[in-house]
Image 1 (cartoon, one colour):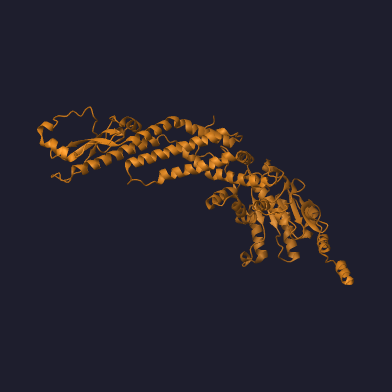
Image 2 (cartoon, helix red, strand yellow):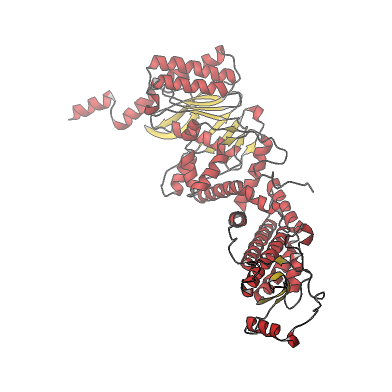
Length: 576
């Protein structure tokens, strides 16, 4: 059996994996609508923050992604697993916080003990339940199998079976405790100077008039017990306890009711000077309180030794568990509407290929889950040696942005191990996803729109590699056609030279017509291709296909559909 350390165990990274990652830029987070997706995953703000931190971190390690994908598959296949795990891990976190922050110094010592016993009992039940649920389902992934083994080891190594019996017995004895017998030593002025626990009893002390009886004893020689042998009771120890004086807590509780503990505590009792003016009852009360505090402290210390710290370390997995659970719940809702979600096949990042069949935008599916009735069009897309940079053209509101965003979201989901919104997917991971969508007007005041767009692109090229994914949406569309085409042409050449995978959706049909020229006269690792969104019979189909740009023909199709060609207008006028 491989010995995993629960402190470093992860459901996102296999053992000894390289845990390096790249983080999505703020622009990419916005352009891929991450906040919209998070809102669909959970309503809880703290959960959104936990999931966001994991979602925006990209790894291109094939083994890591495959590990995550298999773990997610287990969560998706077993709703009962995710329901139970989320409940128990949250409860375990609450228990740890109670134990860590509880301020009960002023509470009754026995109450503290009972409270501690309840916490440990809940801890045992949580670990036991986690073990039971992990053993009851058909787990297939390496990560979940190792989690199951870790929990089994925690359960066995902590002696939970015996501990549960001890807790039950201790609870029973504590419930029966009704009185404590204390032995008190007096000095020559009748001041109590030390005391110890003689026994714990399951009946209340019933004799009335303690002080009256005491004075009756001291007034009568016949009633005074001379030279009482206390050796058969309990030893009295110094009040400042050392480790050697710590009692075995469980033995005290087991033998204490109707019996005499093996060891008793000694305390020095305070007095008010030579007159012995402090009432004896007050002194005894302080004595009993101090003794019980010491006894309970030792019992709590002994109980704590049963707790395997690795059990609480399971709660370190809470963000990862919530991540998988919330995504599995969303995938269930989408597939319930008949939309496909697939387990992506993962290739080597160095291949830089990608093939996704019937891909669609996750945002549209979420809107349908929320009650909309959108007719979602699915498309195929392939990135390979012949097509790694696509110049996507088409009419306004023809689906260019929806398609571009869909590919970025699918890549991100696949690399997080989540099932992809498509019929099938083969993904060679990217090292980061960069986006270049139109900026808010307020952010372009200082540089102007063209300056701001150029500056952002320069920042992307400083970080992009041949493994990167770049999505451009109507870049340079706000400048005049000649200027925009000049910059866009150079940008595409640069991406070909680097070797990135790219979708550049644009109205610059002339740019799409230059693909052969760019491929011929620019060295690089990625070939450029033209892709269009289709219009058939004057209606937008939102289908994306490989084809040269249609340019004017798109406008003519739309014009014919709405009857605004010259011929249609002329004919209408003549008919009037």
